[in-house]
Length: 175
Image 1 (cartoon, rainbow, N blue to C red):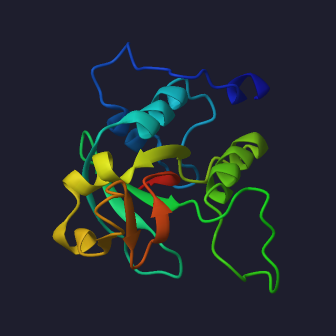
Image 2: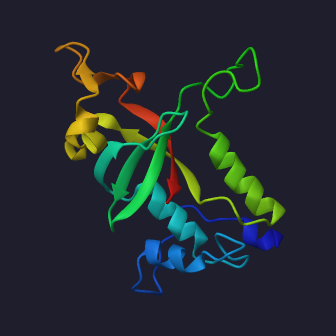
């Protein structure tokens, strides 16, 4: 099992004509999201972190901020923003504050280490809101962006995204 935990960086699918999304969809079963021996896992995760964003829309309901993206190849993913630095301590009740962007990434890898294989595939990814999201955003999502200043065209405020600069870490989960 331990040999399967190491994932090479930048892996690509070279032995198949299938898209990474088709391969990953074949893995899902009633008791697991991906099989124990999965040589293509690294390539699928690389695709999640590098595939071109074709469409961006407002996320579905829930208690935490999220957006729906469609990646190259029509793969839908959910993204969640980085709201805190990793060393920030949220005071108060256990559920005070926002979810941490890296919690799902950690949960995915812990799930792999423990051999459960039930957590959705998740990667961290830097996304440029100005060049990757805004050009492909729906009108509903675009209506949430407001220019801070004409002298700061790379900084936007979103009514639901609060104050974010244009390059932040987002978490992607395969739907």
